[in-house]
Image 1 (cartoon, protein in one colour):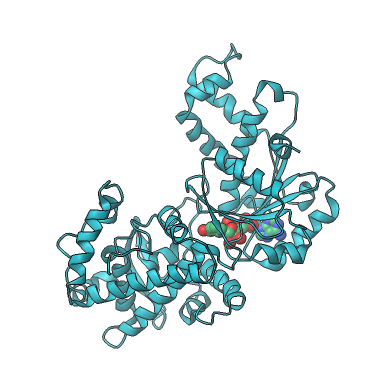
Image 2 (spheres, helix red, strand yellow):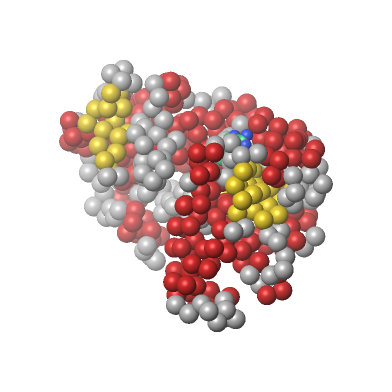
Length: 445
Ligand SMILES: NC(=O)c1ccc[n+]([C@@H]2O[C@H](COP(=O)([O-])OP(=O)(O)OC[C@H]3O[C@@H](n4cnc5c(N)ncnc54)[C@H](O)[C@@H]3O)[C@@H](O)[C@H]2O)c1
């Protein structure tokens, strides 16, 4: 079966979720453009959007329509070529409306997994629950005669475990999109010893057509991205705990968040990033990773406590940030949650005091946005870290510890054979987490 044939009937499981909806959008466009080729017009392309939540599925067409419209506006030249023999389509608006119709008409929403029984390719993006993923895959395999292949978006479950437990016989790989899939360029590709060559070849062609940056990861729980991120979280929480000899919990969280954003020149502090991803999502990922990697460090009482108090973070449906360990107003951090008082404490009640304790940023400091767009950023970063190295403030010490720990995490991913190359760790953190510099660097040597 060639590339086009494999894409004639596709299903996305968990299609109404954060990741599933983005995977659905990208795949709908890829399939619609195949359908629109003159030689394919008599063929039927079908994309089943399957989710247990009927309410969430209802909003899916609206989401797809808005997203396809945005994309269409950016590629009018290509669309004019696609529709060149449609004499009736003259205005840009007419072409865009036709394109939206053509993309949307291949998508069929369903609350039943039975809709995947005719698919040759299935993207799995349901919640991070290994048993549930296995149960659904087994059910599809038992009823689907089309030799289905599975592309799972799992953040942490080893692919080999899904393969063995669901008896997929190598017709599975990890195709780990980053959030949101339509925007993020990075995909971690996890191929096991059993994965069939034709499945890998297809994945590479699909990724190329979607213009994704592929980084291969070995099949170890958490892969590269979460292998680094989860340990970075654990270190941030440890650092906050150690600061609590001299300051309160909320002050320590504020301090570490500032270190990991401003002092480290990252797009977000570690606690903000935890909120962005969702504390419950982080907890689930650690629950998968800890026993499989035999790493008792991969657990946080703080995260468990916050979740038990219903402090979870995550995103609202309009993309705005929900309250988590931090509280946000118009995207800015305004308060920190105090689990003892069960309330948020405004940062302006302690910010000045803690900023003074941390000390000033090096004078060569430039914010992340300025550094990331700077072609000479290596020079900028070298100067910045040289200056920081010579400082003896609390802020500079915490930053040095964090930078060194982040590098050690990266090196451990290589020595634990999660990846074969230091470069892969750096690419994942640069591309998937938008860091200005990879963790494996020599800035503090
Ligand atoms: N959120 C992220 O940043 C991110 C990034 C990369 C990978 N992932 C992984 O992607 C997967 C999905 O994560 P998400 O954040 O999109 O979760 P989500 O909770 O936003 O979406 C999951 C969807 O699955 C649906 N679902 C649950 N049980 C189902 C079932 N039995 N059949 C069909 N649908 C079902 C839910 O209704 C929901 O719409 C997980 O494996 C997660 O680890 C998440």
